[in-house]
Length: 101
Length: 213
Image (cartoon, rainbow over all chains, first blue to last red; front, top):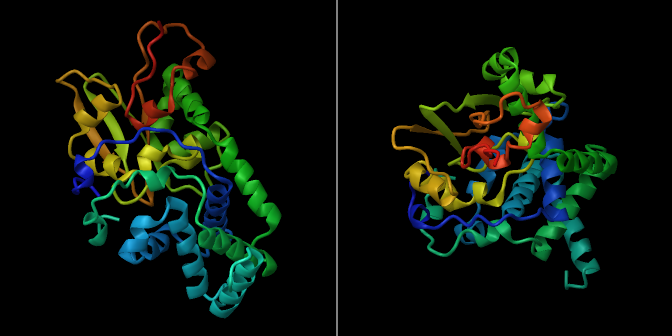
């Protein structure tokens, strides 16, 4: 990002922001999973996953949305979570939210 | 992030997403799904998550300020801090077991340090807590390495022309803690009083320690 346009010509928004509960839970998951006692993910794997996001989604996603995307991808890639069970779980939660699964 | 070609092309404001608060529903569900599956499998417990959040909430720049104040009054501690900041932080009661290497950089009348993470948002969280939103913003990350003096000026920090500004770029494996200069007029002050002068930004390098009125 060093010196890269258009960011290098933009003003810095210095507003302070609180973290949401979602932000905190995602941060907690990353810390727990990367802790040496579990060693289930590393920061370089996380960045790799985030940087591989489709450009439009990368631009749109919040900071911690990118993080949870990476956590999910890495957990599935390492078979800690099965891809199918994640899909089923998401469908259940979507139904719970009152959306069409 | 800099190795990623596409993020250089878009032109809209990249600051808003960093600061927005609530995630979109699909991401909220993704977090819940991943967390609940990990708990069901016994990889983590709900209690682990709660404790980790409590730990995060307990980490504030006040810890860094205590470390800096100790370094100002105790030359032997300062030597240890500059040699191995993680060990020195442990000495002050910080749990750094999940932390990357931390390097403390001392500001002097001749040299000022400012920290950035051009790749992402690496930051010494164990010592300073979560980074401010601007630290994670594309503009700060892009500009600090290019025009540090101008960026510092935007933060209200004006350094004399002769002072060298050294910009350090954090990585996943190495984080930086700036040790600001002790302000004049604080001779004989105790550590608690001194620590109150050490703001978060002075330990990132975008500000100086507060000079007492």
